Image 1 (cartoon, rainbow, N blue to C red):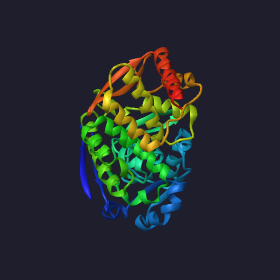
Image 2: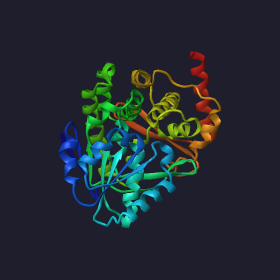
Image 3: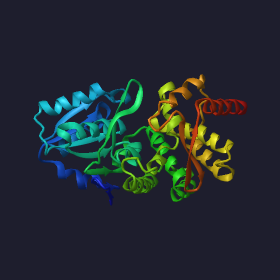
Image 4: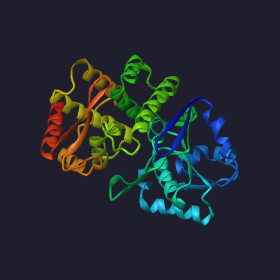
Length: 353
């Protein structure tokens, strides 16, 4: 088990990652007022462990899936906490994947103007990315993450123990974010390529998860509120990925991040921003995880959805694009030009089938 301290100008967060982290750290919350928020899938797998570890806790369970990340479910959690008499000194524990972490984190930030939050991520994606950094949110009217706060957890407990019950597709979901980090950080990129044939090995995942958290913690430390231009790097693949996720569905968030990366890498190559062996290596990593890139119809509708992405600060669509190992840049495109590139990518891809 290793400790990473995320210190910001507003608050500090302790991150404990590695085998044995849950057993070593979770017992510290066995007593006192504790509210554990989880979902139906995680409760079916770990309900008994939750009760054993947090015997005095109040447990609230939400339906599994992105559909639960909405204002109505947020109010239900807050009402549950109020009905159970949770006070300002209570601790809210988010025990689950990204959806649970996002909505439970937002509830903790709002209840009585903020109570202690502990994140215990149980999916690979939430371990490498969403549980760290303090972003909390729910969706509104089909638009992702438009109601939210920046609220650092007191503690994040990342244990590979929980990965062993994940289906293969959930591992791929987390690998989507890991490949994103590889496109941002040279050391992670090198490690991914050196281990391209054993990306799903639990020992490798434990090591690379630590590396991704360390990278993100350094970014958040310097740009917690996303207002200095550093944290936007973490959105690589997400502008197009979110638009496709909204329009097409049927895949996990991490898979859509990789699909978004593929289309945005095409734009980077066409614009002369990225190319050569590096671009091909990134494509190979994407293919290794996804197996194939889907060729979506009605691409213009997805392009229009990208206009509403919260990362845009004007009428243009903001893309974070890879340049070379450890380097990235931002490109802004109008809707017409962005749509043209997506259509070109689809046409060229169809020509290869």
